Image (cartoon, rainbow, N blue to C red; front, side):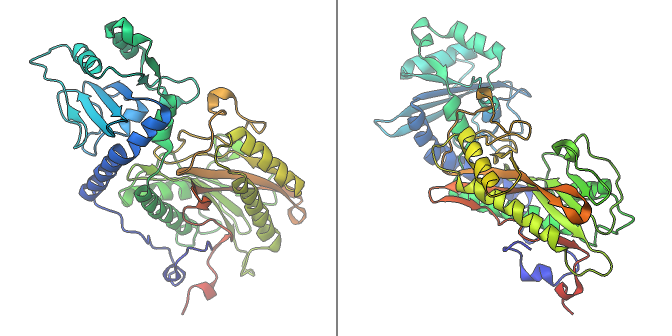
Length: 448
């Protein structure tokens, strides 16, 4: 099992969730505290790095900019009416103003700067705030390369520009780099939570891929998927995509990567001797995980997985290593992809890499390192030109195609684990799978 598994888990016939899951009121407190830290400690540096002294975000209820959505306090599930945020950074004075052109304060940090009784027109009030500060640049969230940074809709853009005096219109620029850095950058406290969240994700997978859930010859892949979905609900958590479970076995031919999605058979009965694979991720405290792990269903006479599957998993781990060794600060995704693929191929492996940023969103903003259908590199409008920055998280997602003579076929070792790239390089957030999960767990692993 992964290195971080706890001895207590090995002594139980089923897996227990090893992390405390907070009640809603405590979650709200943590979310708001983290927002305060990000606004006061992170945002000023990000604005300086992006060369922006003013950032304006505009959204209407139920049509929120994806960046603005991450700035709402825990009690705000949506924007209200038209919500306008204005951040002004005075680098010389080392101050940052956080204002809302809205009827209400937005949490503790963002203060309402609009008295509708004094100035009924919301746009005019916004322009007054801009003119009072006379910024060098006004960043708006429009972007061709990053969908998360393209949250300003046409109506609000047109209204903003129609009200903005001409002398300021030349100062309007894309806030793309700032928006992506806000979304992708993780704080130390967030990374502590990310470890806990990933640990919970691993625990659920281990329980799903156990005899508690799976009876060979009876249980179907679809039933395991819905068990995982229900488990998340029962824990008071959410999943950001529907789990998938699939099978590779001697009688099946290898098909495309979409085997795990639209091309995957439903309700396939799990049999002894199957290699199981899952794709699963959950949401907690505004962070997201994304994991793919493997299990082997033991034959009656077996107490461990066949050596050819053990070796195949090792090949998958080697592809992971070639990727993470090539994650170098400042290197763009296509360059990381090309070098990692070539290194793996030179070592005799058959790799495919499709790693994506992970964090505030499951498929988040930042450095894209391949897509499953773009192994020659992604196009510029997929964020190809974006460099790898420190303090960012990724779903290390990839596969290795391995020939199995004993099965007279190829299989794919599909793996995915949350990882963190920091000042000291790459690390897995909560370990990675280096041994196959076994169903049922051998009795020697269960204690007396």
